Image (cartoon, rainbow over all chains, first blue to last red; front, side, top):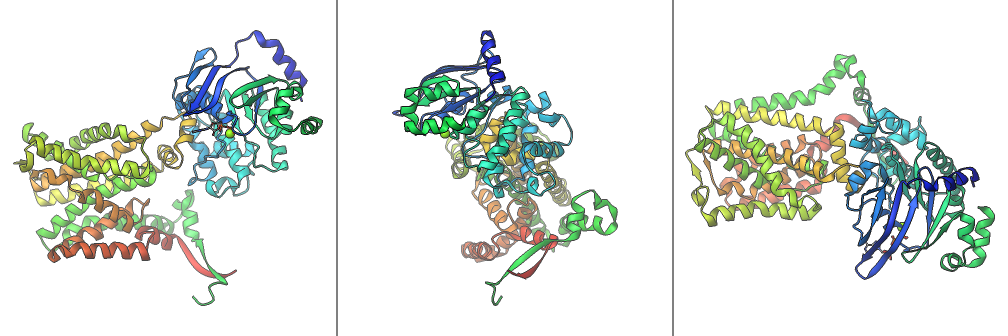
Length: 274
Length: 338
Ligand SMILES: Nc1ncnc2c1ncn2[C@@H]1O[C@H](COP(=O)(O)OP(=O)(O)O)[C@@H](O)[C@H]1O
Ligand SMILES: [Mg+2]
């Protein structure tokens, strides 16, 4: 836990949030996947979103990033209404996301997967991560980015076709694809799930470094212990509604969260390690 | 192949292939020629073809083959580098053909002007009309694009516009048959190498990204529809160019240009030549179109031969000639014990 950043967060509440979600609802036919969810994200913080399976976490990501149309509600980015913008416009503004079901360019080598986002209009405008969008040789920079994100540089791994990479690398590749755009916000949809303990342990410092570089993160996770290490604030979803939000301690102390999320003994167990 | 449970075939890149992938290609004559040889064979071979043909009839076959090759190239580009399986070859040929015909008969433009203009404008028309279908994927795009030529042909027939079933006659031919042949062969070569270069640029990479995973392209802030439209424009302009040449060769433009042959044969050629290689489909046409001419004497039985050749290819060489050829050229194989 990082009390320093947290107290800093509390102080700048007067500032306009970088992302404000206002009463988003989404119905798939008869299923109410989201029901009037509102929350704010401040610049530079890491917001964790947790909730049981099917509680609407991925749907929120899809609504924010424009991949599905909301039934009602608004999304404001730096005060601007982006509710009706198409996904590529939203990504172009700097709100990027990973996919829970990983979506690399399967037939391309890992490093070529990054050349594509480095070629995007946003990367060309902002220079992209590590200046990769401006340089003539995007291939070299994409290997630099892969190294930064945890691919061994001198191995053959960056040159392997994406379809042959194991899950751990694919999750990193998802994150790298977001990073290449030099984003303002990265929304991570379960980047830790499917990874081994040691793989997660190596991802945590990476996440912290991204925060230090000024990137705002929203992290959807089932791995609570690791999430609580990095997140400044936690929001809990249940059946498409916001149950509560606050620090990990506050949230876990909430009786409703205990009831919705797990058996009560397990909470103590989780908190011991958090 | 005895005991092959204990052995497997190992494929290793030839040293020269590895060296010529990088800058070192310029280090020796041997390596330069390794790179240049296949290209030279193709270029010189195509340029010699008209001279080697026994007569006017076979020279005409070569010209038609090149038009089919343009369509096959356009199909392979869309299918393997953008992920759009288009059965609209006949649509492109028809639109390009009618445009060239109108430009020639009403505006009096000569062939060297109508062909490029019909390609550029026809590509625009085809792209605009296909725009609503671009979100469709796989077989759905294929089916809809197949409907376009049928639809336009019926419209021309029913409304009796653009000459109706008689078509547009009195179109200028090329100056002579040598101009006709070399004009098309040179254009085919230029487009073949041009498209090859395009797919290896970063734009080509994005197009392949669209094929693999269009959602990730969107999530990277790029407009998928725009890229698809661009690719369709390139592909349909190539088809229109072929159609425009066709009407100047036959000096006639009619609804038979919307015939399904122009949609189907390029696909068969791609299967035979090797999809994704771009040059493979061109070779496929060089094989298939003359064969189908030879079989013309057999009447309807020709379809049977045709089908047999295709089936044989799919069973014995499903990867296609070029994929097989490239592998033999770039790698050697040996059996290793496991
Ligand atoms: N495309 C869809 N069509 C129909 N129902 C969907 C769709 N996507 C999600 N849902 C439903 O919405 C609810 C929330 O799903 P999701 O956001 O994926 O949950 P989570 O990510 O929290 O596990 C689930 O009940 C799910 O079945
Ligand atoms: Mg989910």
